[in-house]
Image 1: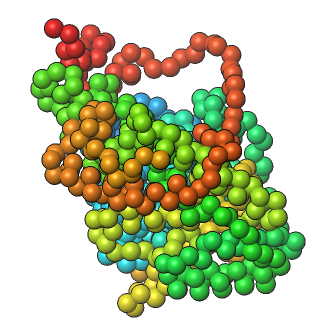
Image 2 (image 1 turned 90 degrees about the vertical axis):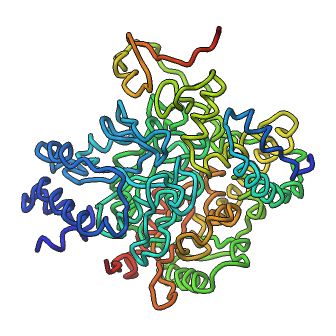
Image 3 (image 1 turned 120 degrees about the vertical axis):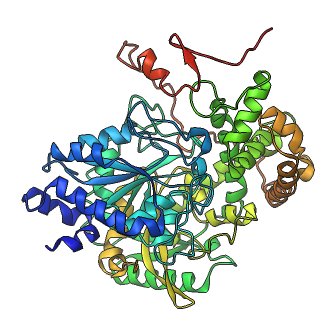
Length: 485
Length: 96
């Protein structure tokens, strides 16, 4: 193995080298450090990296553990003890995490090394990473385009071989959509599958932590480490966690896939549609049966999602009051001035917009008409999926209706940006799991832009979508493609 | 459902303890008006016999033993405080 090829390896390919002592965790970290120095100036995926702390961990890493000696990048909304956790917001610019999130504790227990924090939309609010208060992250496939969001830093780092694996968070599509736009694998676990303890809350009934990786196998490896009940998160389900690797090598004979007729909407890019059609044929050739299903309330998903997500956000972000942590405005006249200016000066525009919308839908006189109605529509969306899953094992559809759009193209119109979540946010509302895997490229002005195939599975049925995604991935070469940087 | 585009951004900002510039207030008034207009489609849905879903996967009565354990020291809890003294947060004066 020549060292220059090392950053391109998957976690599963790296492990035997580590276990046979052909390379040490310290050497892996150094190679990754060089790769990041070479490419991160172009893509700006990272907000902070602590190689010194990582090097100390690498020296004592046990390579025989499931993720022994593997460096993992972490979205900057998950607390890693001693490291910054800024949520890409000015209000947390000087914040340092006093403790490890449960997912970080579990990664460490599996031998992994959380070494750096990745860029994101401020407080995970956005679909392009352009709402970061720090910097823009660029799509490695075309630097003038967005990497998607909100986990855009994690996705760009994986796509550019500047991380072996990463954690992101998905509230309405924030793992799957950037995975799709950068050509990597992104899993949103079922609600309650992974602990949220130590994750800075955006919308507590929708948020989940999940992996972004180069392959489905790597995604399963990380899920084996992080999934399962946590006494510190009462919404984390007390259900057994299967070995996700075991599911991977089963064939697709007898598998039934549902194609929702509502998803082939107007506005879907013709090259995305063609790639999804081809992927469906491929899945059929692997033995899966594909039938049409109906999710009749799909068209109401975005509206219900934005009411519920912003309502929960307006309550969650009330904690940023400049008292116990974070930014505080200078010389306040009184307490109201202290709150009002701390929040005005600390939050970016999209966060303010969502706090206003969320406060409005919860306010007296509008609660029933907006918030309560959205919760009822959420229940109908949940029932749509439950009915579909009586007939099929998983649902197959695009992850994003379009490939990566240009930086600045959608920032002036929040509604257009919100519509980027059209195929993903219903999965969060229903609490089910979903994965995006690379399924082709759109040719746009001589550039190749990745397209993602989304597989949605029943709640707690991650093993099934891993199985299908893995079979598809291994029968194609899409996951082997790399951008030229 | 109430008239949708009647959001009063300046009033809601007061409820949210969030100062906005005049320019931001005007911008949000227009943009959130558009979002609310788009969301009017929720009115089409018959929700008369539907129970509201606060969570996709309802979990009830999650209990654990009430046992003391180590957690933050006062120093750690104060480590990110914008102002502190004598192991206390210093806050803006509330009463005269």
